[in-house]
Length: 159
Image 1: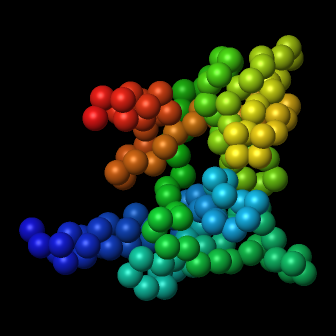
Image 2: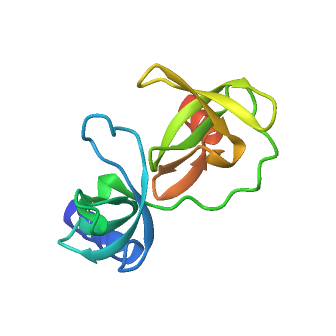
């Protein structure tokens, strides 16, 4: 298969995966937002590998509606699948924490009482307290599949 055909197949896959109305998560390379994923809905495709999305929680500056922005396929992914409900997280477990309207990757640095945890964020060198309900197990979107963080690490170690 030629490279051109492979690229075309991937574009088609993206068009199907991110069709109008699909719930997705998007990330930005803007300062202060790197590594965070925000819930959004695809409004429409705007080219071969770009999509216009509407955020579910971020609003316009004048607060007249939800913010819309274009993203390429490197910065958009399907919403992660529901995982089994986790009764509790363990020390040093990698999690996504819902903070400032987005999901940020962190590590459980301390298990507190009352279903609360301290989560450490490497990128900002911050430690913040979260309720259990504002955390989810971290998953990575790799090669078109969702992989639990521990599985992704094993995959890297044994390549």
